[in-house]
Amino acid sequence: MQKLTIEYPLSTGSPKIVWELISNAHGLQKWLADKVTEDDGLLTFTWGHPWTERDTKQSRVLEIEKYDHIRMMWDYHESTPEAYWEMRIEKSDLTGELNLLITDYATDDEEAEELRELWDANLERLHRISGL
Image (cartoon, rainbow, N blue to C red; front, side, top):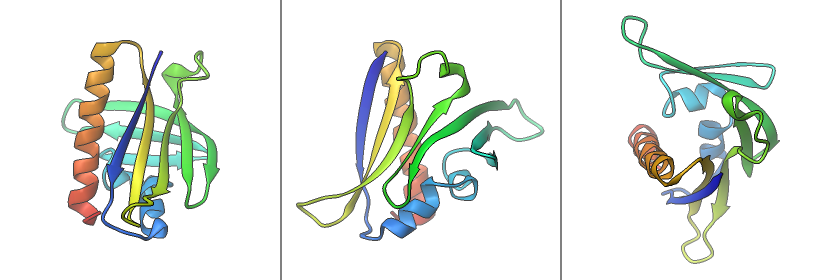
């Protein structure tokens, strides 16, 4: 497994605003998937619409620290415990603004590049819907 850490600058100093978009199904549905539901720490992400081809994946919340980070694991990675994915809010010492640090895992260089492109697209959607 190859660990990826990607840092995205955000145009806010409020961890509360960012937290609302990364820590629950309602916030994640605004930018990460077309539909997100939560049931007892299990998030179900659906991409696509009912009249099109759809993709559904589940992720279990492993660790959550309010206004700091949320760590999850996709159901298809359960046999590889180090393969979590995480969104962490950090304050830049230089600008005072917040950064969103994404940690994810890939099996090879090709998948790592695909994951970077996917996260870039997701963060572009986050910026579009929230201005962050």
